[in-house]
Image (cartoon, rainbow, N blue to C red):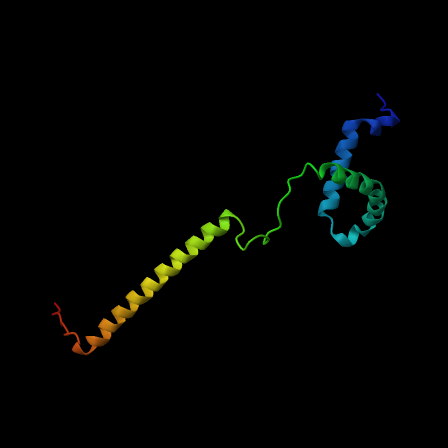
Length: 123
């Protein structure tokens, strides 16, 4: 049976060919695909108004967030948690430094006592 010439109108064939072309273009180096920029520029003429329209329609629906770093110095509950943790670590660090200093002072005091050598016998 002879295939009709209009097989490219079949949606499955078109989808498979488009996917194969996209996969081939995805792995092809840029120096061989520079020509794609011209059709992309032409398509952007039609796509940009749609994209801008969707952005304008959906912008009231989008969540409004305050920019980071605005406010009264504290930037939300995370700031307070981090500040508290920082102060705790700073306090612990000061305590450990004092402990190390006192231990080193004890070594300086008793450093001249020396340690006796123990020589074990060998078999």
